Image (cartoon, rainbow over all chains, first blue to last red; front, side, top):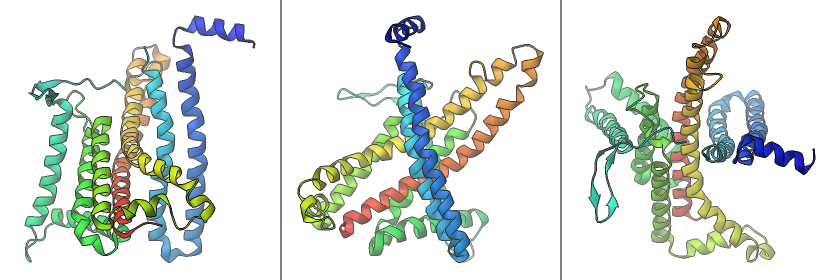
Length: 88
Length: 255
């Protein structure tokens, strides 16, 4: 795949070919980090709740707080996707 | 992103600023009205014999906000700032929840608009800075920009730009987090119901094999709606929590 092929493919797709490619890449790569983060958060929360069940209420609340903050990172990437897809 | 067209109902121009009543403004009024009705009707029931199920519900929610958000972050200013935090929570909650009512032309989430969330984030930013300056003076910025918890080598070289960017990024992250959460959920539901190649309306127009598959995106849309209720509560809680956190920092001093 050399640059000539890429340029020809972009010309076939249209004037905003790279915007659409970037839109797909943005949300795809953006949810990677968020997925790892959510996995760590919930794994550690379940582990510590199993260790000390009487703290489960507090751990539950902190878990949802952390989840929302990590989920926001993936949504920043999704915002870029929508900005790129809105190009006509 | 351009799914919601701005429909101007009452055009009002004031000193060159466009203050028209659009459909988004109507949604904001509905959200504010619901907040007012919800909280005031519970306050009226604060008589010894006036307990009902509805005021119990409001009390449970207020208790939740007070215990987890206000008392956790605000220290001994908790009762002073609790009304503000609770109002922020309930206004954003109702602004989010209105978007789940399925009247397509008229009801949409007031917070699904970047202007609304940016306005609230800027308001919180200005209030936090004002409270910080009022309670600690300009020493607040010295404590934040040159934190004592950093070794002296970094405290004057690397930390100030990082902390400055951190302060400036807070209203952005507040606004974009709320806006993107609301908009993404509604976009997914719209795409599942009306999108090309996978939407329910598209599949119902095709041959018999694809017609049988039509309930699948419908079930997906129902599940996403349920998840959206959950997200509405969580995002309101997170916004109120971060507001209380920044206020707590401004009132007590940070680092």
